[in-house]
Amino acid sequence: LLFTSPFFAQCKRGDAYISNGVFIKDSVINEVCNLWQNYLHSKPDSLYDNPYWNSAEKKQYKYFDLLTQSEINNVYMYLPYYPPSILSINREGEYYRIRTLYSEHDSIFSDPIAITNVYAKREDGKFKLYNSLPIATSNWRRHTIGSITFIHPQYHTFNEKLAVRLSQFVDSIAFQMGSPTRQAEFYFADTFDELMRAQGFDYYLGEGNNNPAAGYCDSKNVIMYGGGVNEWFPHEFVHLYAVPKFPGADNYFHEGIATLLGGTRGYSLDWLIRHADTLLTVNKDFRIDSAFAEGEWGKYADIDYITGSSYIFGGLICKMLIEKGGWELLKKFGSYQGKESRYRILQEEFGVERKDTGTFIRKKITEYARK
Ligand SMILES: [Zn+2]
Image 1 (cartoon, helix red, strand yellow):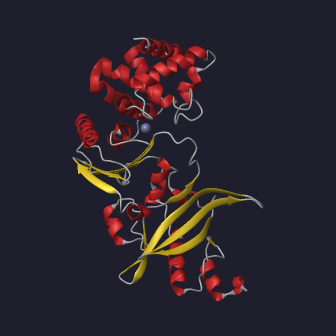
Image 2 (cartoon, rainbow, N blue to C red):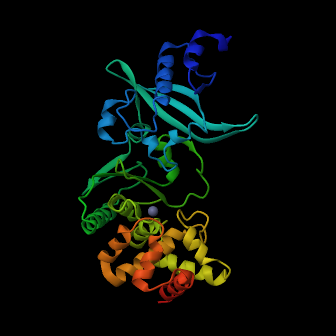
Image 3 (cartoon, helix red, strand yellow):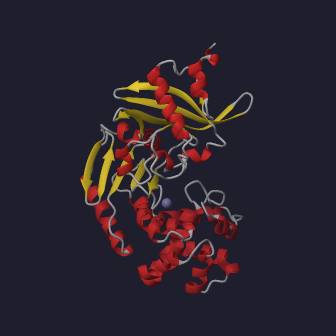
């Protein structure tokens, strides 16, 4: 009978499945459900003045739906492959929380990529959509120092000394890049999953495990996320300034400069070099040449879990460049486009032929590690 109800039929239009647990006979629930479905059909993965989103957040954030700027990329990009199921619509104070599962199905199992939370509230009498982040973090502590607003859960005691250190670091990066400082929001917590939760991910593919220090830079909205870190979080802030300045640069430039200046996963580049030297001494069969060529995202070519190719090799190249010719030489590498530039800069500045890259890199790792 439920399936033949006119309310259900009305709400079923489009591609979203509505769980039988969502009581759409309630006119308000139905209105919220329709709003969300309309939004899902309004090309949410592209940026325009979307009529279903609230106006305050459209003013505050350039890419106002923060689920489009996440660790797992733009969640709506997956809609054709992971169709949405609306799981629940819960009233929470003045808001309604809409929980949606994005999942692939076969006849028996479900393979979800995410469960998201988005909120609805009336604006001038009509329901509009709201991000989870400001609602979920409304009782977090906020401190503004220089260009950065530090935002953290109440269980953390703010360390002003480290915050000042980060603020000064950011000022110096901006100066070196010749960019004005950007007013940034920096959310940090004990785990990255907490931040994803706050951003609106009830679940995401890859959550949990042995969550080490991890970060994400939403460069478009100037929001930084750091999990398992404290106020001193330089790596992602390097990206915040280097990415817009050198948008076409090789990933080895971007991860290299961020690791050189800010370390990665809580380790310094020097530590990473010593660690790689030890690993490579043990693992003599490791093919540096293919790892060096591959490592666009460091995913399949990593020496180990924490030693991603772009961090160690990119970091090494950037270190050699800054020692040889300072920031100007580093920026020259950044001005080159794409993956080929890692070979081009080694050739131009250190006379390394492409076929000798692996041997050269291995030699340099040993040199720096044993200094
Ligand atoms: Zn990075």
